[in-house]
Length: 587
Image (cartoon, rainbow, N blue to C red):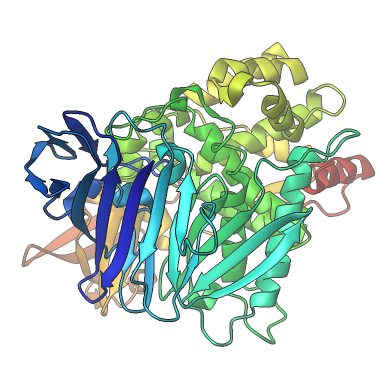
C-alpha cells in the first residue's frame, strides 16, 4: 500500500511537507509528478513547486537522481520500505493546484503526490498531519481504518487518488439528500450574511433534476454512479471557475455572488454561480464516466489530445443553464438572456471563421488555455460554440427526428449503449442518424469540422424564439475591445477586418483623444463628430512613449458578427409553445 503523509506544519511559508512510503520498492525505483490535471487541458508543470527530494531505506540515506523535469529515480535499493521526503510550495488559489496559509488549505493530489512507477494500480493512502486546532477536512475520498486512524483516506489506485481534491480549514458546511444520495456543500471564505440554506435548497434542485435526467427514465430508476458527492467552494474577492471530479467538484466564486440572508431576488451573479454548479455536476456523467475514447488511459506526463471537447465541454455548457430552467430556478426569458450572451460571444470573434470546434478541442493545450490579444481572431471556444452546436442538434432532432427524438434522448442513449463508456465521434454520429436521419448526421459532421456559422436563427424561429438585431456600441462598430485601468483607457483587442485594424490601432494603445477632444470613455468619441464630416474620427493614441494620430472612417454598415437579441415570440401558435415548452422543460 502506497502511503502519503501530508503535513501542514509550515503555514506561513505556504509549504506542505510530504512523506511518501513505498513498502516494497524495486532495486531501482522511479517516481514522477503529473504535468497536468484532467479537466484542465494545459501543461501546468506542477513539479516546479517541489523542493529537494531526499530518500532513505531504514538507516541508509540514498541519492535521488532527477531524470527529467518531473521524473526521479532512486537506485541501489535493498529490502524494506523506501521513504521519500520533500516539500511543495502551495500558493495557487485556483482549483487546479494547491494552496496553504494560516486560514485555509486546499490541494489536488496530482500537485503533491509523486506517482510510484509500477505501483499505479495499488491502493494509495493519504494521511493528513499537524492540522491547526479547529481545522476541518472535506473530501469525497473514502476514509480508511477505524476510529484511531484520524484523517486517513484511501483510494483504490493512483487515478482515483488524483480525482479527490481536499479542502482544509474552518469552513461552512451543509448537507442535503438528492434522490436518496447524500451531498455535502463546503464553503470557505463566505461573508457572515451568506445564506447557506438557500444555496443547499437550490443545489438540491439542480442535482435532483440531473439525476432524474440520467437515471429516472423507463420503469426502473437507476442509482447514480456515486454513493456520496461533495461540493468544495472557495469564495474569494474576485474569481470564477470549477474543476470536475468523479464524486466532487472544486469551485471558485466571488463572495458577492453568494446568496444573502433576507435577499429574495436572484442576482445575475448568483445565477452565474448556479450555472457553474450545474456545469460541474453534469460532468459527473459527461466526461468523468462517459468520456472520450482518447482518454481510456490518462498519460500524466504529457498532453492528452482529443477532438471531442466540443461534446464533453460544449454539450455540458449547453445543459448547465438549461437545467436552471428545468429545476425552476430561473424563468424562460432569463434563460434566453443567457443564451443571447453565448450567441454574441461566438459571433463577435472572427476566429469562429478560422477554427472548427474539433480543431479547438485538439489545440486546447496551446491555444484555448494560452490566450492573448489575438485569440479572438484565431480561435473559437469549444465551450461556447460547442454549446450552440448542441442547441442546433437538439432543436433539429425535436423538429425533424423520430417521435421522442431530442438531445436528451441522445445523451441517455450514448450513456446506456456506449461500450465501456468510451466515446468516439463516429458513435455520436451513428446515434444521431438513429434518432434523426443520415442527413442530420451529415450536418452535424459539417458543424463539427467546418467554420461556417450555425443555422441558429431559423431553428430558433421554429420554437417561437425571435432573432433580431441588437443595438451597437462604438467598440463593436470599430471592431475592438477597450478597458480602463486607473483612469487610463486602452485597447485590449483589435478584431481582424474591422475599421480599427485598418486604421492601425493595436492592443496596448492608450486612447488619449478623438478629434482633438480628451477621451474618458470610448463612446465620448461620438460627441466629437463634426456634423459636416460625420464619419471622420482621428484618434490620438499613446504607444511606446510616442503620441500618434490615427484617422479612420466610422463604418455605416452593420459589421459581421454584430450582436443579436433573442426573445420569446409574442402570441406564438400553440404548436410552437408546445415545442418550446418540451425543449426548455425537458419533455
